[in-house]
Length: 393
Figure 1: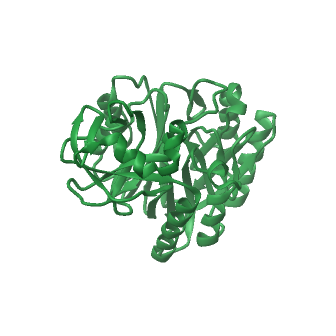
Figure 2: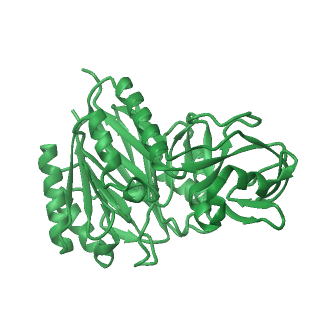
């Protein structure tokens, strides 16, 4: 039987925080030592990350420990988005194994990074597998690395995200064993015999119909349906277009997973930022490489849409679980949380309402990795939930 527990501390002393969170996690799990551990820490502890990791690995009696820095951290129903916060999740049992990995030097090495990860974890593959990946958001080439990793391990689902910080450090950090490092990717393969549920919930929904690209070059779209792209965008944005800086924090492009799709369907499109606009030239620059003939739509990020999609996602999960969850990890975009909902602990409260008191940990991400259209994808403005369950006896 898989046993797991989550612990949390906001103690200002880093060693005390690590001891409190680790002890609480072990107690909830009913374990004296763990087979694996996840650790997420806010930037308030930045200079003490190595001290925290040494304490966590010593208290949990395992070096199979990974995690990263996060602007905010999640433990149970507690979401801390500023100040001191440390979350630790431990697990153990004969049905589950843990194998950590660490790969440094990310820039210009997407294919090599993916190959090194695959080489490190491939010997540990079992009947059930899940690869957790945590990366330095500022340095990883996220999309090409993920695509190369999917080619290396095509049957292995991947979840995780980019480490984040609040600007006080100027660096994001990943954790592996008792080491903390920037310019690196870390993570863990969990394998064995367990049930796995992966889901993602998006904070955006379509604004009006989809549009066919009729002129584009590189990442710049100049025409949609034969009209200036900026004009179509401004109409979709409505009153938000009066303040373009604000508009670009709430309005994005949605790109269908199926080429030529006529509309954006829930769970069948990716979200990408609009990186610039030019009313003079009628153009939009987007964080993608659109082509003439492709379809895009505009999306609005707001609290009600995010809440509705989260509830639908959790209803689907609750209806599909064959046995009670052993533990979960939640990776939530930094654009969600209290800044979106105006209340703290929103998503965690809904997870508990639908799934019960599952041991849960996670962090607020720079980007997310999770399921979309049946494959692991690079996501934005999303909450990714990974649930591990014991098999029915």
